Image (cartoon, rainbow, N blue to C red; front, top):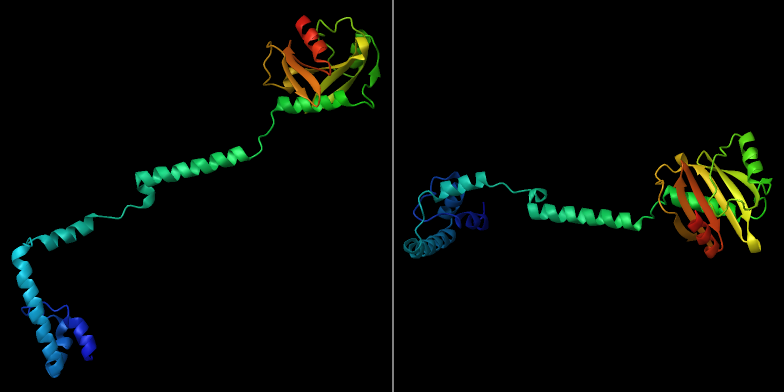
Length: 248
């Protein structure tokens, strides 16, 4: 051990000889006894420590049980993980909630079955080539043609279309359900298509309510349910569509 190492240890030596027999200081004290320069430094260090201690002792009364209390307190106090601290836990939960909400709002929303049904039927309504499969102005003959192909023809035309000549019909598929499209060309060449499907194809659609009218690709569409059937009427003339719906 050299003098520098001995000084580092002896700086913690308490005045009054209380650490004389402590093995931690034994080698450093022996080094000080062998080296006069180190011994002189150690004496001055002890004198300074004694002077400071004499100044502090009257001013600060140290409780006898301070050390025991501090050791006991150290055993009792345990650091609380951040995820158990209420404020931090609440803040973390709020951040997670905001991230989830933002992700939900930014994701494209899945269209409903009713929206998808309207979009698909309007494509058939706008189709020019092969618009109808069976041509006939007679609704009775159209119903007979549907029945021979196992399609339910038990539907009720809106009052505004009853007695009006038809152009023909076709059968289209919707998620495994058959939907009938009947084409009407009314006065002044105004074109309207009526789609009829069993309500099982749109089980969540309410029955008996007022027709729901929307506009898609320049066409007006009215959708309603009655007698276990879903009806969809399309047309490019809003005034005529409203007139037929009022009569219905």
